[in-house]
Length: 121
Image 1 (cartoon, helix red, strand yellow):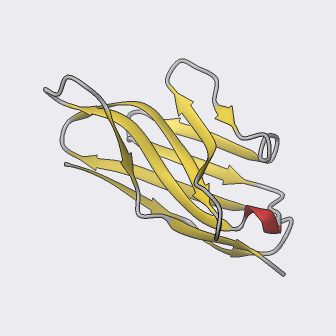
Image 2 (cartoon, one colour; image 1 turned 90 degrees about the vertical axis):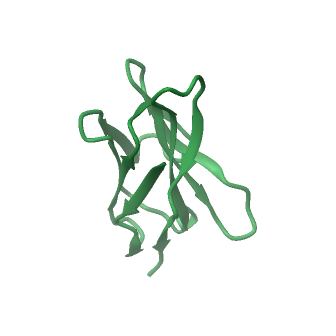
Image 3 (cartoon, helix red, strand yellow; image 1 turned 135 degrees about the vertical axis):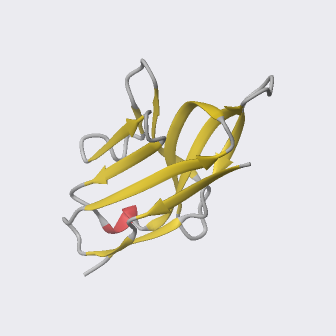
């Protein structure tokens, strides 16, 4: 089995910064894409940013220029650096990995438990 463990959420004032981290661990696996999604109350879960090895990262239009995603393949980690935070960034942020467990013929999506980010004065 594979676990994704997130850290780094919390309360921050508008204009502030936060860093979210996620580490994948468990069975032997190959990760194709890692990313961050978020879900605000009453809204659908949406992609924030994702990164696939060898390709440029993808960002939601609402966070482009403010958020940066980075990945360490050797450590199976993905970080999300969030700057110039706005109240509308308030949501539960979920780490996601599209990965294939060793000896499996296909990949699947795995999710972390979520971490709350609240932007408020």
